[in-house]
Every structure is written in C-alpha cells, then in structure tokens.
Image (cartoon, rainbow, N blue to C red; front, side):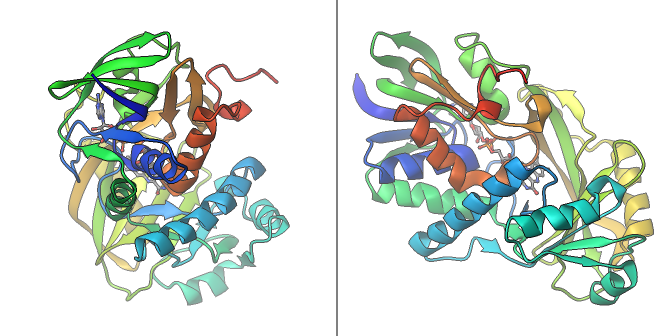
Length: 361
Ligand SMILES: Cc1cc2nc3c(=O)[nH]c(=O)nc-3n(C[C@H](O)[C@H](O)[C@H](O)COP(=O)(O)OP(=O)(O)OC[C@H]3O[C@@H](n4cnc5c(N)ncnc54)[C@H](O)[C@@H]3O)c2cc1C
C-alpha cells in the first residue's frame, strides 16, 4: 500500500489547484485524473472562462479579489500568461448596473458606469440599451493551460500525478482513507474529492451532500466582424432566466446561456447540442452582437454541477474533503480554491456558505 498526506481525485481546475497549493504548503500529494489531459467530459476543457470582479453579491466580489491576487502569483510561478485582462462589461436589468458599479467601487475596483451610447462607441460589436458597467480587472482565463501549469508546478515540487487513473473503492478508516487507483492501493490521511460532476457517484453516499444537480450546457463560437479586443460580456435581460455571456476565445467570440441547461449525469449525458439552445443563441447573436457573423462556426457541450444558491461546496467530513466549486462560475476562483481546500485539510473550519450543512439564516 502506498501512503500520502493528501490524495486528490480529479485534475480539472479544482483538483489541479489543490494539488498545487497543498504541495507548495509542504504536504505530500498524489493526484489522480480518470481521463487524459485536455479531455472534454467534465467542466474545465477549452481555452476561455470569464474572470470578473463583477458580482452583485459582496461575498463574491471579495473572493474574486483574493483570487485575482493568486492568479498573479500563479502566472509568476508558471512563467506564463493565464489570465488576459481584456476587461468585462455587464449590462441589462438583471445585472443592476448602477448597484453593481457602486458595489465594485466600494471594493476598490475602478469600475465605470457608462451610458449606452458611450459603451457602443467603445465596443461597436455589442448592442446596449441601458447603462453598462465596465470592470477593468475582468478578463479571460485559459483553463487547459492553467491546469497544465498548476499540475506541472505540483509535480515539480514532488507531487505524484497520474492521468487515466480513476480513483475508486473508497474506504475511510481510523486515520484516513484507503482507495484504489490504477493497479495500486493507496492510503491518504485526507482525500480531496474534486471530481466535478462525478462527485456524488464517487462518494457513493459516504458523505451526505447537499443536492448537486448536473446539467449539460452548450456554447457557440462566432466569427467576429469587429476587430478585438473583445471584452467579456454578461447580459442579464429583463426576460426571466435569460442570462447570456460572451467572451473572446482565440479568433472566436464564444456565446453561452448561464441559466438554462439539460439535467443529466456525468456518465449518461449525450454530448448533443440542444437545437432549441442553438436557436436561442443565434437569435441572441443577431439581436445583441452586431459585431459577429451570427452563424456559429462550431459548438460544444460542457457540464455544470449546481449547488444550492449557486454557491460552492468546500468542506470536510472526517478524512474526506468535498471540493465542488462550480454552479457555472467556479473557474475564476481556481487558485483560491486550492488555498481554501488546503486550509480545510490543515484544520480550518469551512466558510459558512460553502459548508456541507450551511447554517440557516
Ligand atoms: C460551458 C461552461 C462555461 C463556464 N464558464 C465559466 C466562466 O466563464 N467563468 C467561471 O468562473 N466559470 C465558468 N464555468 C465553470 C467552471 O468551468 C467550473 O466551475 C470548473 O471548470 C469546475 O472544475 P472542476 O475541477 O471542479 O470540475 P471538472 O473540470 O469537471 O474536473 C473534475 C475532474 O475529475 C475527474 N474525475 C471524475 N471522477 C474521477 C475519479 N474517480 N478519479 C479521478 N478523477 C476523476 C474528471 O475526469 C474531471 O477531469 C463554466 C463551465 C461551463 C461548463
């Protein structure tokens, strides 16, 4: 049997961040990923996710600030650009631009509140009908490059890293967790389950989880007519359940819906783009993104794992840490997730909102 302080199941953005942080903080770490690097079955594939300070909830504005400082540290240690701060715009009544601008300024962000004509002059590829918040700290993260960088840094510091090696057969005992990975049996003082949409199935009832709902989402790639740089965009329209986001990814503008997806599971999802979602994306691009050719050049699917309140689950029960920071917005926090989970495995209490059983207000 092989022994380690910390084992990590899953090397998406979360598991890679935990492997990096825990190794840097002196723990012996073994990290396992069920599939090959860059696989497209989970939540972290592709080359673009939005980083933004622009939340309407002060709790998350504060966390984005902490995450932003850690992105800078990660870029220095990795020696590469992983977060391209192209700026972000939020508009539409659902984003409450006046309140959001005030909140960001309270948190030290040099946010601007623009009227629609000024915003359209600045970003002619986007149609605006009301006030617009510009978040100059916002930008685009490259998730695959980030996972590779964090995994490489962890391995350089001594972590054992294995791909195509699913963790299975978890058995908590008096001083840790025994499990199988590949041909070996391992024992870890703490096992961090960072398995994205597979979290519930992997735990198999060992830890009582809050309801986690997995949905299949889709994104569409459009060719820009307006030259860049494009900002990231979040648009909360007055129509219920319409929250669209867009961001540059390589030569494309990627467009997706935040709130609508198809409930599924990690192992039964079908990878098929919902034709109604495609129609909605086309209609949206025609109406709101005059700077793109409104015919998608490609499309793909991806999984969200929703936790109650669109929050995350970061907590431990005995020797198992549950690390599920998704709800469709976890990527931007990745390096902070690594720190928060390492705090947990060193004995810190969970953040209330991320606890397995959040206290009721
Ligand atoms: C379409 C889309 C757009 C998004 N846009 C944004 C955005 O703009 N900004 C933002 O902040 N966030 C965004 N997100 C959310 C963000 O991408 C996720 O929060 C993040 O990728 C979650 O990473 P994860 O590591 O928790 O999960 P995953 O990336 O799914 O990683 C879990 C890993 O665990 C592995 N695994 C499963 N079972 C086992 C096992 N038994 N043993 C070993 N390994 C196992 C899986 O193969 C997988 O690689 C978006 C998500 C999607 C789907």
